[in-house]
Length: 174
Image (tube, rainbow, N blue to C red; front, side, top):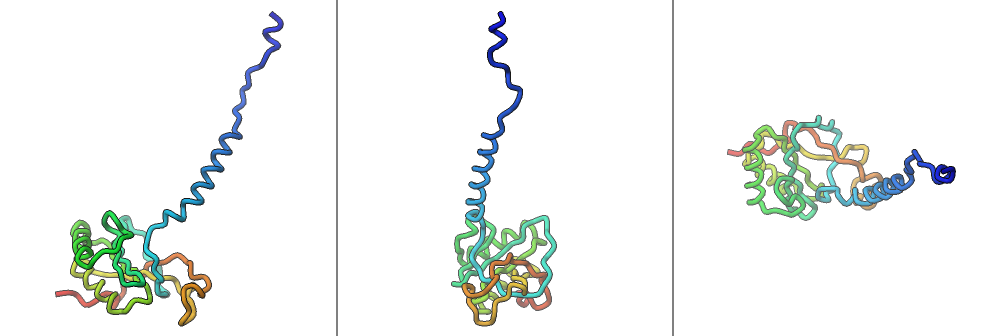
């Protein structure tokens, strides 16, 4: 009988080393995949000294125009696929009918012709947008005049949305 009690004793501790290993592996996986999940279209935004808009309960309707002048809308099944002006009109009209007070922002590359941005604003106004705001970068990240995005220092700052002000939207349609 004495030999039965000399055997192994029950251990009341939990070995947490395997859990820490799993946590570190998951951390590395998420750190590697997080930049790949960034949504959006590559756009070099113009700079402005406006205050950021307060956060809203509903995501704003964002029309992006890339360097080639292609249109992208954050509404629909494929926000990273270029759409035609007809598709843009249909999607924006449907979104504005669901919520007429939804904020509308234009995120245009600074190298596109001004007329392309105005055309996009007119389409958004025909769709029912009362005000169209611009998405810009803060002045702190301004690159020198004539510098490209590759040569600018600090050009990777987060974009901010500027409040719609007088003159930021095209003339009312109709």
